[in-house]
Length: 427
Image (cartoon, rainbow, N blue to C red):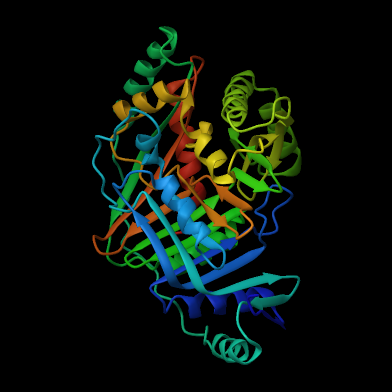
């Protein structure tokens, strides 16, 4: 039995900031924050895993899902980490030819030395009472009065010009017309070269304003992942799996009346509904590989949800696992998420590599945790800044689903809305 100690923490938001500043002294730590953002939010309210007892870091090795299963099985506690989009190459006859500017592992998980669960005004630590008291004293002693350095030299560039983006969109629409695919997720990269980026300060600032239900911050040596994701990829608990794909995005209205109209407009938008239902069908097909016959169902179709800056169309799909299916096998069977590929899935992934100009890597992968009882919850790594501190390379990829009805100019504008939902907080 792992020892645990629980403490009342007073002002929760202040304690959370102090905890993250304390954690930042270590080379590896992770924070998951659901921002109390409705029933869509992560299963954990606020958890911080600090320092690594052991880690799994894989780039080109084979059988990475199998190695993850073995790593989890031999861990004494929960593990935290991510699966990169390019694990697709292990699952299908695919490759990634585009340049990799971020140079991160395809699979990274670690078992923390310290875990802090913050919920209902209390913090629970996986340590004895005496050691926990010492940790709480260190955290509460953190001085937040000194201003954190902020980046002021960020000059964002687009890896793809507007003209090239629109031309690619026309080619994709032709692929759809010819029946090669019927939907494709197409993304472009914004990047900045800087050695003056304070990742923790940026995460705190954006998270405070975006309040996304699947926010996460991962620091691993010289790499930083700052995710403000609104989307759940997959959750497993008690042999039940759920996925909540997002397709359909609008900027929030400037007032209640306009916002109500925009919600209605999104719900009735035939293009967005078509995109959403295509991905729902793809998720149902992915779940069917692991599910007991007759248990795959759509719990909600075309749900309209409001976040701090945007309105999104979200559907929910669930299923119950066959007795002979390991929960991590179900994760593998659904990977990568259909909302970030298109359909048919394999051909869509092939065309993504053809039209996009950089390797996705961690972007559009999944980040989350796996508990000792094999319950897990993973987000979709969108609305995500990724920073290679050693190279001074900061990346933000944005995109959307393309169908034959897509209007290239509108799709370009949608990428700007998505990028601005993050970048406007960086000054």
